Length: 271
Image 1 (cartoon, rainbow, N blue to C red):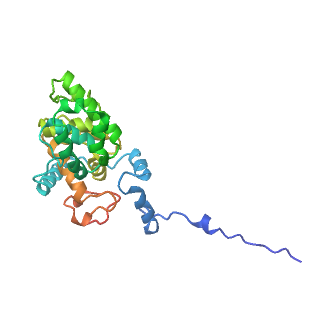
Image 2 (image 1 turned 120 degrees about the horizontal axis):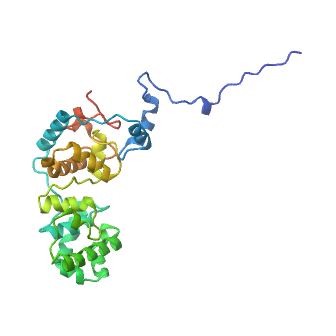
């Protein structure tokens, strides 16, 4: 009797391949998966695409239009952290790490009432500071940074917050973002660009950078944004990131920058 020939059919797992359209992008059947890797912070796929080159949109005319629209949308954009002087702004910015500005603003009135000057902070015990700032998170490290900064401001800068990047970076708990906030807001000095989580996310989505490290993103922005816009640009981007270009589901249909944006994770597009 003749032997039977059994045809092997590919398993469902083996036959499930990513379908791609002629443009080389994922089809609708994989769009959901793709979007999950590009939501909020740049995902692995986006980073790989960036390394391959391309995607930057830094034409001066486009940048000028971007700045014009941001200024029109947020004409009164300013730092959301409540403060009365450079020292209070420095402390509030340190507290804002991994914490909302709203929460910081709830904590600082009591904090500055108990410790009104750098000298008062320098003399305070760490537990006393921690007790007030506990709700901002990471309060052990933040208390150490604030106490250390206060002692250095008192002993090396005569109780005054320094107004240069080099000197600010010598203070405990102060990196470029905090220094840029203090210099731009308290001293009106455009030394760099504040790159927080919102500026980082929006700069990537708008094709202003293909870096994910804040320092490198700042360098890219400093090259393409005119210096006289550095301070306002950061405030406007932060406001836009909070209100419209949010991390998980950006509100693209309401976005004044939508026609200038080709981000892979847009939720709506007019072009």
